[in-house]
Image (tube, rainbow, N blue to C red; front, top):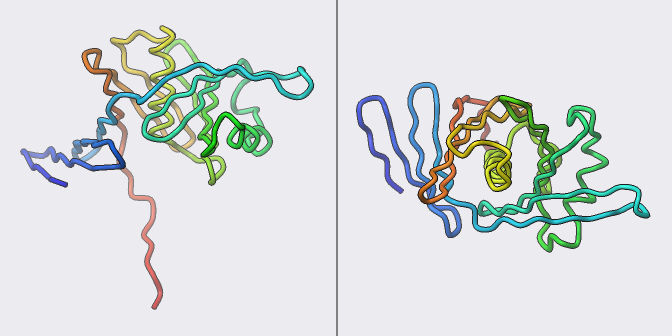
Length: 182
């Protein structure tokens, strides 16, 4: 909606549904204020004749996410098997993005099963849902940024403790150019 240039920093406001996200970018990084989560709630489900269960935190950042803290190394998970039944679970009438995470001492690792797409290399709103989950359950200090490692790179998440806005910062990279053939 508006671009403001100040020295080497540029700012842009984007409207997406009911939310307005503002972003700033420099030559190397982009930061996007995603605003606060719309809601956060816990969900517990057992499946497979009671053999397996999962506990997820449902976070709506403008789109639905289910964050699952995994005891298993997420790199060992078969997302092609685990993702679809969770994405299409009856608790999600419009399906959901599913984030599987491992929490380390100084970092978080994330893999995302994106609704309708399958596994993705990165998910900015998914990382925000992960950060909200960690802060909500006091699994990460609210005054400390969270570096989240995804297949596509590292994003850093910051919480504004006054209004609970979540800001993500990461590198901006040109990935591909596309066009239509007449």
